[in-house]
Length: 425
Image 1 (cartoon, one colour):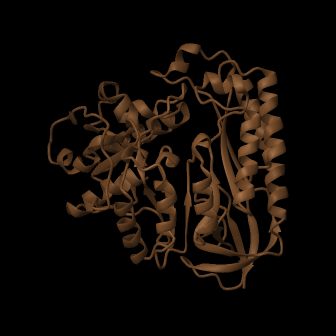
Image 2: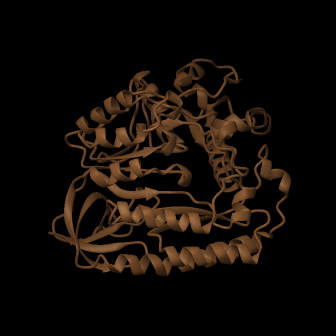
Image 3: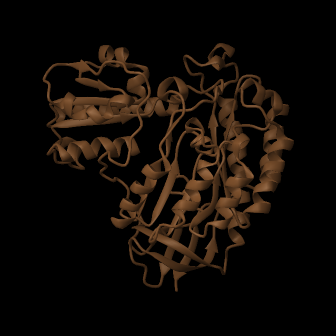
């Protein structure tokens, strides 16, 4: 999202106007993801839809950017002739250049060293109350299933001062919520020689007037220090929320994933988090169907999810990615078996989430009021601090006087598996 907003910022400075109607656009830019099969398929579908606008719309130039462009640059140009230009992730701030030529082209390959700064122009695509800040780029981990290091390069951090400048500017523009993202936020600053930079950043963001709350995403379980947890607990406007992608808990699967760890370690980690950050909301992601995941390994994962009681869980099926060590392990587990395991875990989590949410009935929560519900204007949607945008549930406001793009107190009257229902007080 941030990459798209930086490109839009450059285009706005270049005098380009935007439209939300694809058939009206003369130039289309598709910013792609190329991490897993489902994301690649979605990206290809978006490219093909954009390509059809050369026949059915006003499109005269189609530009493809992002991770898929980085991984499959020659193939895209060869196989989808409607594409006029391909821009890798390192060249997004040169987007204007590609618009100025009438020749089919691809920006030359560059080493993945780019990271945006507070000086980079951005055109926010989120609603006025929320925004994302990418604090780092790239990843040093060698997870056997993951192509991110090959696509986005090794980990590199922005400076705390640079991030704070951007955060203050966003708050001055009306942003109340900031989401800190990076491929691994827990190693923020280590490449600059500062092992405790994430802790320091959290405490400094806590001093910004007008920043109502912020949260940390993508915390690697092996680097989640007591210092980081203490900073979250002791900073009032830092959401008591952690997004920790564990991926699995079976020691053999984790070893094959080149991640390390086991069920006992992760159980202790969750206990440590909850002891230091009271009332914390925890999200995790898991991969099912990794090579070697037999029934016993899956059952251990299922038992762990049942015992821990996460607030939010995402489950993905394993997909073999070219260029990763796991690609050579094969992909012997049938698709229907993977999908069944996803269904089993999500049904289990459905009941856990519902039970957790029921503990909130009768409580008064701060809610960021965001939008009218898609199905009826009688319901207004928002989120409390324990719900991240797009990936978690919502608070459905059915009474009172909610005002969009404000933070208001909402008393919770009903609880479902993913959504809460309440009234403004």
